[in-house]
Length: 264
Ligand code: DGL
Image (tube, rainbow, N blue to C red):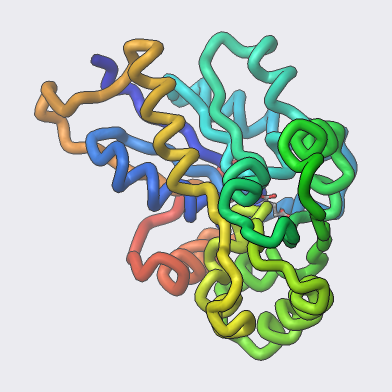
């Protein structure tokens, strides 16, 4: 039994999709969430930049006493998690595109993947597809600009729809029956994606699976907060960007009024 908080971070607000599932699966856990919105997006940046930002946030979270860190960002997971597991004395849970569940769900073996340029170019993604997707046809689509729309709190704007149509249409033309959301920001676009695909394509979003994996790791490491202490869980939000804009976007994306503190 451990009442220390869980740290969750992302390049920005996408990781809130993971946070929402963590709140459902582990309601007794306190959480510190960091949005690196002052430096988002990560998907078009190089590995040293993403690693340097992820290290900065990881170290701030450790200073605040977190017991585990969820890297709620496919891009940051791909370039840091192996190193961080060696460098820091706490457990890490990462996220990666749901290729394995997509292969199980697809009936025609044609799977589209929406992710950032950096995730799709990463060695970790290459290994993932090599392990699980050798018997299917994958159609990878990088989506510049899409995570920004979520950062701006505009999941339903016409610009978002135009970008989604531009990225999904070529995959639909290949007759994909399954679409992997390989970036945590895109979870907030699932409604818009369903409209564009007429609900004919199965969407794979791993945020719930990540929350369940977090629960397993907490149990394994004897770190889970069972609620026995009676202390009310506390969720705190930090941003490296504008705290007003972040709070406004959280209101739009999660329908929650929250205080956001500055992290610099
Ligand atoms: N949310 C991030 C991911 O899961 C990246 C978005 C970005 O910063 O480009 O990959």
